[in-house]
Image (tube, rainbow, N blue to C red; front, top):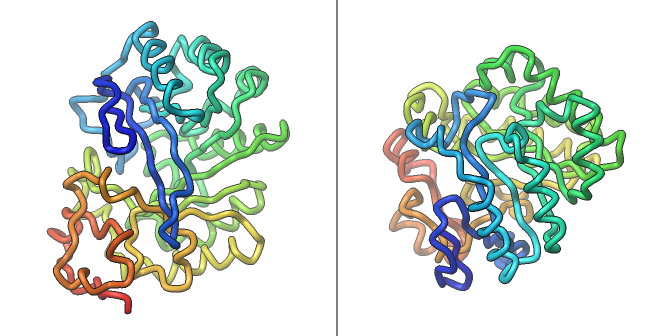
Length: 305
């Protein structure tokens, strides 16, 4: 369901808006997001898509209707899934979306970009940003998390192809118990590949992650030293950074990189403790995930004065 300024503008279940704010409390990005289906060629152990949704595949004309309607409100749109690049009508949807004036971000697991012909074709459509997932510094880590042997090599090859063609690449790394100790090595790899913007997002405890939460969700205080080392590397090499799903109380010195959803767009999956009321970031921080509190309690969370 899409909302803008708190108002519903469409009942399409695959479309919504994003309203992000930065560390200073100012709105920095806004646009439309449309899932063009939840079918995927990975089977990530941290996937946030519920199992009963993974075969949902909205029809082409329905998607075009929604995209056209969204253009009345927004100038930019994110294509997400599932995996967007494996739809048979993918290029048809991209062509339609560009022709009505949208700026497009593709959110992908990156595997299809390893094919030069595919990569050249999508670049020729004028897509502005390519978001690519990389969850490990080597095939052992990444392929385990995606459940697909060879996916690491495909993603690395895909990023190299996109950069060879002069494209803006935004990486996304989901922080889990299995990969957090390798965050500095992942950062180093992404820097070496020439990625333009690097995003580290704490795992969302929903969907497949809920089934694996007892082993895949890391305690934040145990993960933080590795994240900080990775962030410091990115800062050293002057990379744009984004941090998601981590409250400000853990991000001292890195607040400017934290991205939060505006409070009025939050779901019930986030919950603040009473002690949060006195925190200097109370008005803009989303607080911890409620399922995290069920796993680990709230002792780690301390207000910032």
